[in-house]
Length: 437
Image 1 (cartoon, one colour):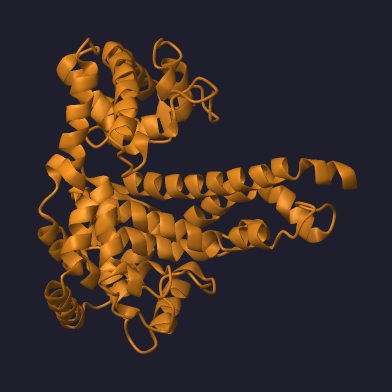
Image 2: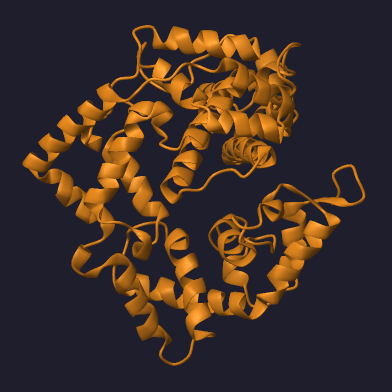
């Protein structure tokens, strides 16, 4: 499958073609025979291809050299991948026997199965015992998993009071920085490596995030974003009011799902999901790290990642697929991203529904249409979660292409989720649609 040039191919097509040559990996495969999304996310990219070290092989479109290298790496690991599939079956069975419910089974067991395949090869007679021991090591004995430790730690009234006081102290003493709108605009307009280096080294993202904490935070952010994008700024789901409030410590005290006002507990729970047990610091240290991160601009401790999120905030107002093409004057990258979603079949179907030509579904479409109208909000939510994961692991985009690929990938995944939601609604209501057709 090509993308307009003979030597460029979609990465997904390259992976699917190579995966077809691997027998014995059915439990890691989707219904169409390709690798599951979680197989790519949890095994292929981080462990086989190692895209953190080879970012050129993680881009959505690969040239012929990169496609050949990716295929070679995947096929060279065929024996271990078959062993991984076999170990996953044992892990799933032992997980049920041990009554372990923490985490998604694929998220938890895919990397562990690969680790066992690396250490033991294909499973032998001792596989059930080995799998059970590995799960106990990962989750801890007697329910002492990371989330349980976090819950107990925050339940201590004295600890909770001290942490709440420390959170407020850091929130109010964080040093502000002057906004650098030209650096942000230069990168959005040019997407060059030099512009990215200048933006990443600046405090532009941090400053833009801190601006939201002022009395007129929403207005200050809107003015800065409109200066670059030329568009009015919709509700982006960053905070509830005109200024960002200090997030609560405990999840039970959250007043909404807004990104920048999520509790420390919720953020640390996300950290626990992302880090293998052997890479986690003690829970107290994880909480302390998150207090520092919460106090930073946009809740991201590394300035380059705050800058990445600022780029997303600037692009978000243009992501209005139900309105068709973005207006003239909008940065070209934003226009491309919006066009990527606007030409999707389900979006065109929804636009016809709004025009009154055909119903999207025979029942009220309010929820589906709201999701489409709030595409920018959903995009930013997904982008922030991705960047928080980078922050936890200490990962940074290497160059402008990495930032562009990151943002493009988040737009694509947001669109695919909405497409799936529309498809499910249509399939579920197919009899009704046939009745009114």
